[in-house]
Length: 114
Length: 109
Image 1 (cartoon, rainbow over the protein chains, first blue to last red):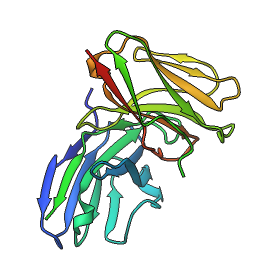
Image 2 (spheres, rainbow over the protein chains, first blue to last red):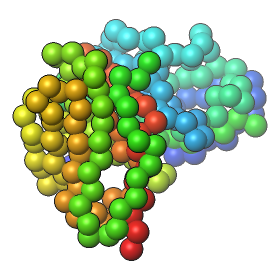
Image 3 (cartoon, rainbow over the protein chains, first blue to last red):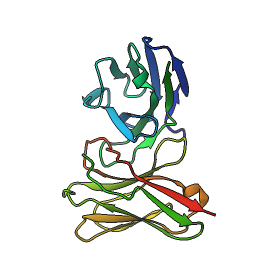
């Protein structure tokens, strides 16, 4: 079956512009996670959804970052007024249940802020 | 504040077994031990997870110490495709994964 998909695969933007990153989770998965991985760094948790609500936003680095999820499916991560330090690979994962369940990761969106 | 400790890197010969260790001395009773791996230029991939008993699946085996303060991921026959960063992660219910630095496994042909 189809796995987690993310779009775009690559995004180059200028400093100060807004960007939207999309995640399509596996159908029926109730939990959805956003992580990011900077060059040479480990994966950093950003936000997690259970259904359409986000019980844990603790990883969002600043108020320029926001995310929403609609219909218990697609999620969009928005970064406003991008900065060069936002350059990273943004990864989305989904699971049937949160916590103990296996998380399935998408291929990621590589964001480059010039 | 990583809860697990892994060697930075390990090396294995192709077709040989590989034992990847992980220490988690502060594990709580509700923590599951998860292993993920990340191949170059890809997102992480689930490998295996367990609670108390040893676990086997088509990818690997997970050996968990009796006191649960350490575990070992076992790849029975390493292939070149197994070269990746392997992450040992503790996770209880309703918490996202916290990735540490992991162990970079190199496989030599």
